[in-house]
Image (cartoon, rainbow, N blue to C red; front, side, top):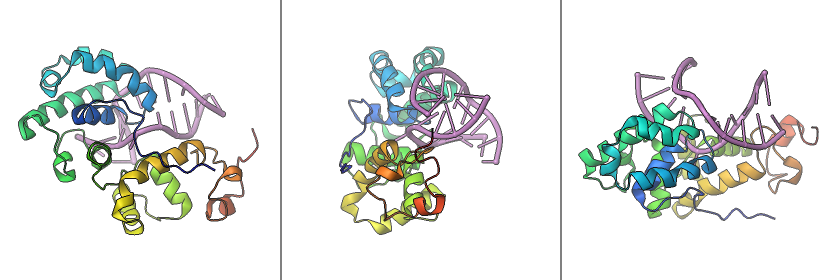
Length: 204
DNA sequence: CTCCCGATAT
DNA sequence: ATATCAGGAG
């Protein structure tokens, strides 16, 4: 029986600035893809000041393999510039302040809060959305509303670890395309198998 | 809502 | 071939 107690990222980073950048890069990409380019990126640009003055073409070459590479290059350079201009290069431990940074949305901000400072926050990504929906914990589709529902269901002390555990659960059991309901510890507590009658359960 | 966009698993 | 991957901006 897996217990899903993992509450830290698989993303490699050394400080809040790096965490912020790799989290932006992780959009619609696997952590593994990001971890491949992160060391190269941070070797060349060690501080937000360095990245703020970076040549976009150089950055594009480094982050290319993570997909959305033009967009992500613009995002992280502007992000670094925003950090300099707005917060003097320091990553603010506050959701409303983080969201003001270019390329940083509610999900990215929540990841950084929970991971870097253990501040209670729930990051609703594609996994959390799918899993909590299937489990019947929310009927919303808007991430911000899902976040509200989950915050009402769980004590604050549980918030920061929630996302990682649902993501882990979503990766190895409640998969997007073919949920393994037959080997799921939530079987009997979840309405998904009843509704969809083990679609794709053992067929190949 | 669409667009951004490569890597990987199936 | 196609779906999916720790999304955010226009």
